[in-house]
Length: 90
Image (cartoon, rainbow, N blue to C red; front, side, top):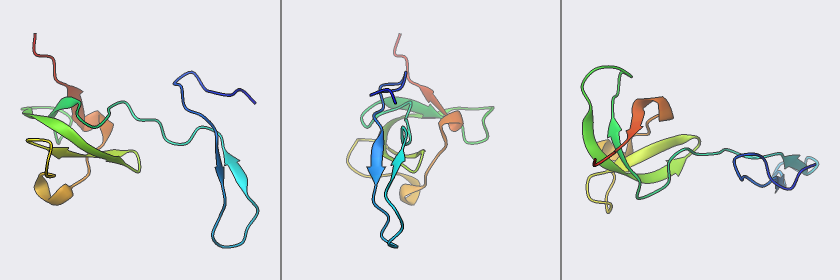
C-alpha cells in the first residue's frame, strides 16, 4: 500500500468503538479547501455568488463559512464543495 495517495492524504487506522476489528481507511476524506481560504458561495450551484467568505471549518466532506474568520455564518450550515468557488482577488 502506498504511503500517500496523489492528493497527499495518508492512510488512517480506524479503531471502531463497537468492538469490531480495526481496519485501514485508505485515504480518509480529502478536502479541496482549508480553513482561512476565501471562497464565494453559490448555494444552488448556478446564479449569483455570495461572499467572499472564509472557510471556517471542514467537516464530513463539507464546509462551514465565516465572514470574518471568527464565527460561522447561517448557524454553522454546511455547504458542499460544488457550492463553493475559490476567491480570486485579481
